[in-house]
Length: 152
View: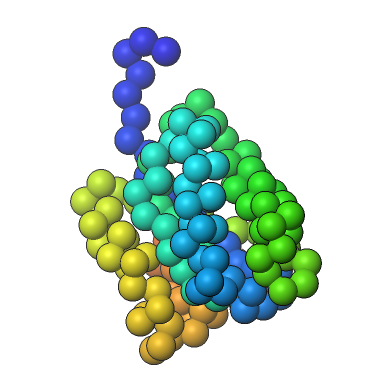
């Protein structure tokens, strides 16, 4: 499209099904590289990716021609398929059915990148549940805890 200019940054969070600690440090970086390739092969720009043994955060610049739900479906479907084919996780690997996605202004990008890179230290002080509910509240997203069982 001519004369169309956008700046869309998304901070997405998703967890391993039932929040199992299946993301081992032995393959964590390979998983992040694989997810980055999925995002970038769709024409988006990965700015940061990180997490812990049971969840992943990613910040990416999104092209408006794609749908967020399609990106997240591809990331979770393709990466879980890869993990299972490679036999990297103990047992069958599945991501949760949902995800959190939050828009991020350009001025907050450096702070969100530091936040994503510091996940291990962050979770030494705060649980994922506390973190995720804070993110929802900060974004003023109304939620019903009955519909968050796979997430929190």
